[in-house]
Length: 159
Image (cartoon, rainbow, N blue to C red; front, side):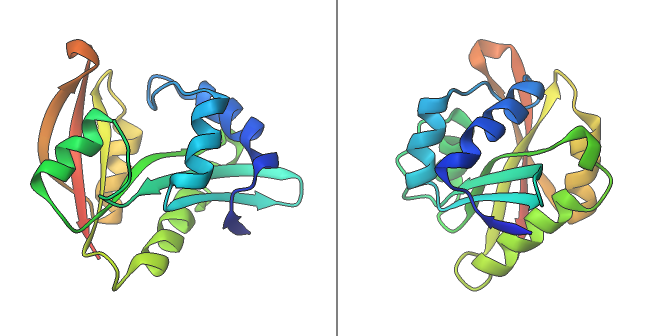
């Protein structure tokens, strides 16, 4: 079941996020509490007591300081930026990531023309890159972030 995240989910989101650093950037509980309110998408996938994954996204008018978000904002005006998605190890290859993206696409189709995100090239994240290309995302640029320690592929998918 995919639903809007609630405060009680944040500890599980934080634990899952921490497992995947540096594939996703490090965050803390205060960050999650802020974007629980401000993000345009903050959805979780749960099955009973099993927390399977989450997705967080923002529209261009969101007050968000991410280098990658700003990169898209400087080049595009009509998109939903997927800041992060993470799927629990035990739920990977079960369609959870695809279901979360489909949920977002259904919610925003007709409201925005594209989904935007980035995937690490350095350090490499080939599984995520393959997954996003399989979903129909195309590279529209690359960017060095975090003082040159991370290089990302900037991806866009028209919806």
